[in-house]
Length: 60
Image (tube, rainbow, N blue to C red; front, top):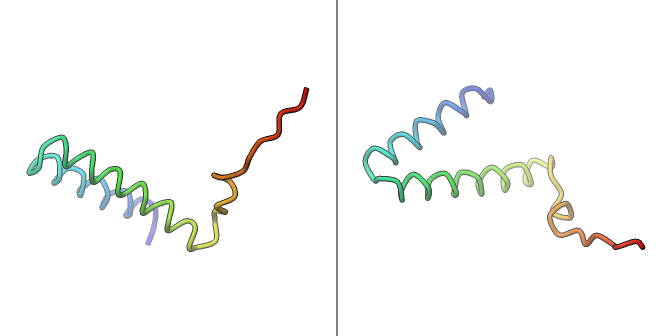
């Protein structure tokens, strides 16, 4: 499935949530979509959790 189709489906889901549920539902669907995107990228092997939890060392 191409990224254009995935984007279209996500946009339609956000539009339905915004129309029927209001702004709160829109934000909830957008946040859960972002979480799903990150989890999907992690499961596909395109992302490493170390990128988020890497502690940067301060050099002086």
